[in-house]
Each structure stands twice: as structure tokens, then as C-alpha cells.
Length: 120
Image (cartoon, rainbow, N blue to C red; front, side, top):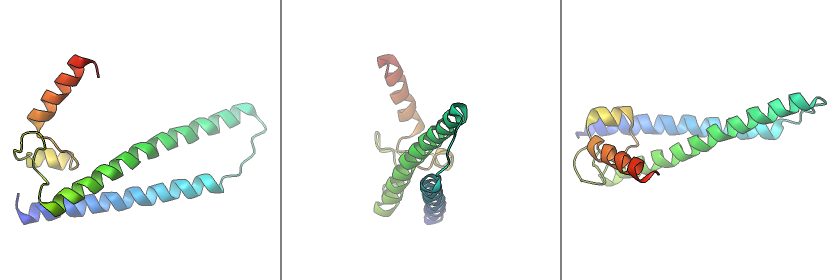
């Protein structure tokens, strides 16, 4: 992978990381500022359901933030774009679709087949 492609991914990942961190901050401030009182139990239940849904989304985003930071570390140490299983190059198209990936499509497919066979 050439330097221009590496910089493309670095810029993309940094931008995505900044957006996710900003959204997480908004969620925290929005949840701590909320002091609503619900006299109707149905309204309260609906509010709690929405809040739990938002927390699940933020948890997934937190995991994505970790993966983005790891991808940026791989860019810094020169291992970005190489499969951690077989050591081969990961296709540029795959990286564009999922820049945090650590496996080439063949190794990932094989891994998913194994997980399915084991019932994981």
C-alpha cells in the first residue's frame, strides 16, 4: 500500500474517531442533564427503553472506538493492511469497506465458518 492510501485511511479513521467521541460526549451530557419526572408508568417505561437502546448503541460505538485506535496504531507501526492470520495484504476494497479489519477476506471467511461449525 502506498503512502497516499495510508494517509487516506489515517484521515478517514481520525475523522470517524472524532465524530464518535463527540457523540459519546453528547450522550453523557444529555443523560446527566435529564431530570424528567414521569407520573405515567407507561411514559417512564418508554423513556427507559429509549435510554437503554441508546446505551447499547454507545456501547457498540465504544467498541468501534477501540478498534479505530488499534487501526491507527497499526498505521503508525507499519502493519496496517496486512492480515494478522496469514500475513498477506488485505485488499484495498475490503479496507475501504471496513478499515478496522485485521484479516483478509479468505481468513475471515474461514474463521467465520469455523465459528459457525463450533456454534460460537
